[in-house]
Image (tube, rainbow, N blue to C red; front, side, top):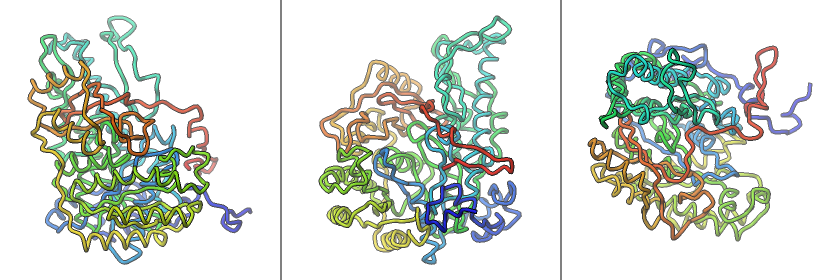
Length: 565
């Protein structure tokens, strides 16, 4: 039989994952000091961590918290999750007790553009197929809870509309954990009186839903229930707000989410613990894994490695200004991931030419990295730059990156976790540990949530995006006044913006200058506890590409899956 390894041909992610010898989940739990009666196994290699465990460890001292973020994403790829997993392996390799706290993949991107989202190469979490597919059913529970509320809303209107809901002003959308552009805009209730009241409706992907944001921010079941009740669903004909609690949907929704609220325990390829829970869109639903998962990892390990979606201008900003604020978290270090290829892309090199040395483009594009370093420092947290290493990186290019990071006062480490696992991330692990031991974190959010919405957004736009200011459409102005009238304006803001640029124009790479951010709409996520600010054209229901990743996914007669990257 042909052996790829012997021929020195790189195995696919799924081939590497399937060749891994996993430990039973009780053994992984034991590494964290967790007993068998504090987990709820889902088969041999997955488990839910129980409320009983959370309560037992509540008084444990917190370990150190490390946030992994990145420069603005490019088609060249940066490898944020791969670096996070590699760092965990590397830290355990140097004798540190480290645990991952990551987001769950969403089926839509897995079958659409990603083909998998559990790390890559020899820095993965396993069982990879389960994590990428149905996992422990959290996504399905969120989808069900979301759509139950929608069903009860439409049923209320059908059964007499006692609350006087204006069908033209329904805010809450249905959701599906799949990319399906045909469902973005639709009409429901067709086919006569028995089928409901016809109205325009919309679907969004499950990970963009407010339910996902709520699950990830909820402290416990009681807090979850309260937040669900606070969801603004619609307005009445006389402009009064209608909340989920008014539809008496909250108890049933909570029942659907009672297991989903508990974090999931799995392992890395090197049998280190990984807690994976929650996976919201960084644009709409704050982009961080659950508060419960992160706080529990801090109680169980000396170092907790977590991540936030997209670049630091989106994911890290929301991690600091929303998640840390709500949860009382104080990060000790930021790891900022970049690749030399991505920096050259920011310097104007087309994707097809990125493997060639180009020091001029690198010097031009590296300013994007510089902005992200400076931005993270605004929060008072030390920064380590992690360069996800590729064999095409030349010595001269590497020297430029090292020199630039030195000028910015940031440690830099090259990580080769993709090819070498923990061994390839030892340099990065040592850099992170040394930074935490030698540099104090003085974390603080960059704005006071009690400020007016426009003032908060102005601070983010000018300090994080480097914009000259903010422009509001008439619709956005009207929405802000409405939110202020409801008394829900003194909360954090969650900015929905393109991930590809520091500006709201995806074509402006590097370090854009002389621009203003345009706000098209502002919507209240009162259950989650923040206001969503829309800039540019933000898609909450992605479509499939011309050649979806699903085309390459298959399963043989023995149940072995292929094609999950």
